[in-house]
Length: 203
Image (cartoon, rainbow, N blue to C red; front, top):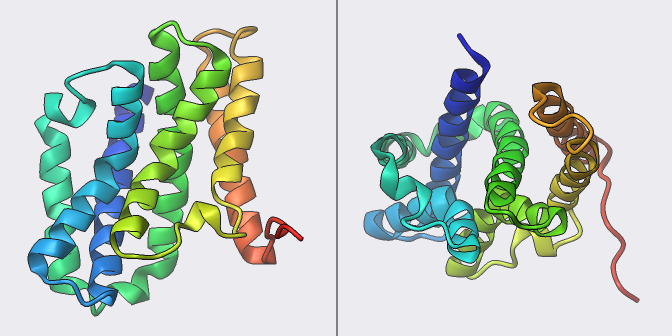
């Protein structure tokens, strides 16, 4: 299996998990099946959609590839029928979610850079790709978004994105730059959860 194929599979897996997380969150808020399905959909594609609109890439990505709609539908249906059992899969979902935000950050950056935008904007758009689906989800269910709480989440994406922005010009197109950048995001996120790291609150 070639690397691009592997990244594509991880991308679809992350999309699947994000769709499930949206449905689970909606179910916890006692939403009906339709509401939960909408929340699952926007969680899965919200970040990428906002990024594509901001950089002028339309139609947005999921409209051009039906695989994403299939995967999102599968994630929604899985969560609807198995949401009572999914709590047992927390560690597995956390791993996929963490790998997903790492991959989405780098994919978002790469797409932004292909549009000729600056590395600074690419860092911003990479972070948007990774976390803003969750922001839309939390807003719709009337919850303070995770990235606005003290938990280390978006910060991990920004750190990995900055590393990529610094190193990539010296090694353009090098897949190891992508992998190391993803590893930084994953390592910060996992370590933060295990050690209860948190950003300080304003005085």
